[in-house]
Length: 434
Ligand code: HEM
Image (cartoon, rainbow, N blue to C red):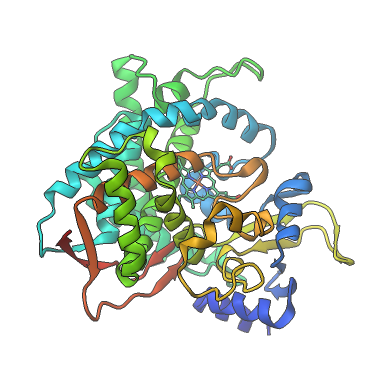
């Protein structure tokens, strides 16, 4: 039975987890190989794990895998070390700082938009990946990486796919140490990503200038409250790789799914266009426009409800704890699945329907906070949340000012839940002038 579970989890995790929730309710226990997993499907239980009782949890299974790519960066480190690194990186993500990135975001979006031609077919997923990669490279590393987007995208896809390999099987970890084709492909792809990251670090070291961006901050960081030691090259590499990857692939997926949803809902699209036109006319969007584009924010929020780029979170319990009268033993893995929770009819009636009105402020106030958690929560909440909202809204507005995107007839739309929720076959769309 556990092996069978492992296989169904590996084959179609979204259907498997939805089935578990439907069958067992808010707490579902799943023995999986040597581990015992609990799927929590209630907002209050999620709050308990991420916020109230967060000290009892570390990042769970999957961390070991993620570490093969990200090392000990912000996303994967724990405890004191994580706190220190988070403090160091935080200034790059302060609200005012993020507002200053707005011009770069709008500039890159306009340049890419202006390269498209009416009637052309594009892969919206690839386009969004290239755009968000260029933006994270420029804003946080002051580097031009747009021309490498193709190669980086391929390396990323390879590393992600090999993450899936054997992930939920009992001997998955062992499999990954063997020189199998999938492992070798993973190592080669990681080396490709490393090459870019180390190049950025070396170039900056050599130039010996403070450009005031995240990379300079990390390079110069000396933790005054901690041991005063500078980061080693490896630590720097791990942080840079983490931000570089976490900072573009998620937002690109959110936007890709948004273009798809808009193409299927012309009424929503028309209302979005009206808001963009009346707020911006033909001029470029800036950080100051964000509060004047409430519908754009609602559209993005609803898109991340149906297609949450981070679709599952896991934590390992350090000690036993009580949940709804059950004792959950120490070392259990707790899963919290945004995909299933965002489609729970208790909080989102007619959950399959795309309806941005759900995110009108008064409607939002009717739901428990953790019914919707695309950015996680508590001390490990996404450090890039403000960055992502700003980038999502500016890119959406800038592109929609000029174009509408239509799905190529017959293009298969399927979900690929690996680390993030990607469109399995990309998103082939035709560019139409508005
Ligand atoms: C739509 C876009 C994004 C989504 C949905 C998203 C989602 C998330 C989630 C759910 C977590 C928490 C993971 C956990 O608790 O296990 C997280 C953490 C993180 N995210 Fe994001 N993210 C997005 C954009 C970004 C951006 C733009 C950046 C950086 C530029 C970024 C950098 C990070 C980092 C460094 C962490 C780890 C934080 C920590 O543990 O201290 N993310 N993200």
